Amino acid sequence: MKRTFRSAIWPLLGLLTVACAAPDGRNLPAAEDFESLSAQFAAPSKEYGSAPLFVWNKVVTPERIDEAMADLKDKGFGGVFVHPRPGMVTQYLDDNWFSLFRHTMEKGRELDMNVWIYDENSYPSGFAGGHVNEAMPESYDEGVALKYLRAGVLPDTVDRFFCCLRREGDAFIDITAEAVSRRGEKGDYYLFYKAYNPTSPWYSGFSYVDLMHEGVADKFIELTLDGYKKVVGEEFGGTVPGWFTDEPQIVVTDRESIRWTPDLFDAFRARWGYDLEPNLVSLWEEVGPWRQVRHNYRDVLMNLFLDRYIKVCHDYCERNNLVFTGHFWEHGWPDMGHNPDNMAMYAWQQMPGIDLLYNKFDVESPNAHFGNVRSVKEVNSTANQMGRVRKLSESYGGGGWDMTLRDFKRQGDWEYALGVNFMNQHIAPLSIAGARKYDYPPAFTPHSPWWEYYRELNLHFARLSLALSSGGQYNDVLVLEPTTSIHLQRAAPEPLADDGRGVPGLHHRIGTASGGVRSGVGEHPAQPRFGQGRPLRRG
Image (cartoon, rainbow, N blue to C red; front, top):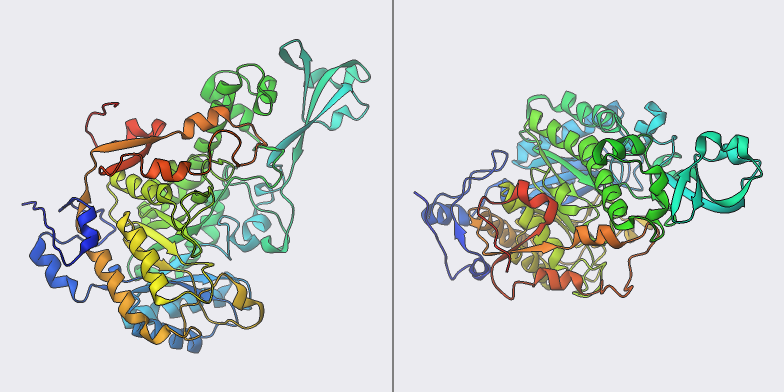
């Protein structure tokens, strides 16, 4: 029998209407009634304990792993996310790496702690520390963007351009096929060429991969997740519950470019029934059916990213009883450069997550983290609509060495009140030597003066995680985000700024639009698929 339960001893729960609900199969069962919740409340199990990013940023040895894990257990953590990061000397993804991970898993099992996979050598996810680039050159060397130059005469070098358009009045004619034979002709020409992400030591001397390219996700999983699966065996989906992805994206570094992938034009034509090539200029200028073209273009990008990367990761987790968690580039909304729609991404995670950096409460900035109500309500609402119980927040990164226990509780309580129920602290590093000490502190290690007292705060959030995983939130109001409207309006190179459309403060207005009534956030195209089954009434 389902019951509703509340208690004054947990004032945060007063913000929610709580009723027992069956959780997703990859989460622990929720408490079935108030008595069951009370019995677990004093000492929640490891699944409800927080789990920091356990940063390997020096020479990693079994002895250092054992010492750090024992200390984290003593401070009340329920698990760790093994996270390679700058400063690491141990070779990534070689036999020794996987052996060390197995040792960590065995130590976690001994200490009754979960050991999660962090899927990349730093971030953003998808290139496997350069191994994907090396094994699959087409993952990065076929171009990821289009730029154009405008010319009054077709140049002798016109054969170097990827697509050539001639403007005739309000129309654009694709003359690519005959451009070479028309060299020297006068006219109003838009000449498009492919652009590439720059190479960088961050990507092991390569550039970031194209996550919309067919097969990249499969190669990434083969090189990373399959390697972990071989060494942990039957604990894949047990002591190793899942994997954390960090900011996989489809951004281009040049803001004057549009995102491109080798079969973009074919995918566009198949989805929308007309050619993108003669309409390319509409992505920069307000010419032709520019609103329609911009919407359709970003819709294709989103679906290529979903189908070829995000869903591939989700499906792998489904097959292997893993939890796909981590976060995307959610704080940049409504800039759709990194990923066109946050909520569409969350829908394919077994435990959707967000990133809440810094220690400045700000409800106005479009780049705010702490104070960004929209961001937290997005992930909570998607989880509600998809029947997910747990919602992760990577918290505190970049807050600084001067953060205190009071700061940790203030920010944590705020995000938990809005729906988070899995605390993932950034970071617990093995070392802070040299430049490592500037790597987005605080550090959840003995390097911090409050460390010996942190166990009590961990217990606080473990209890909240248990309580807030034991019920469901039932909303009376759905606030639709204007993501699609922004897709219609924003030109390709236009930066995210207060451009007259009122971007600053929009996050807060969306998050509080219901005027205090229990509410969720939705994105219009997703709503018919992901609604809770009740009819929607506009009002």
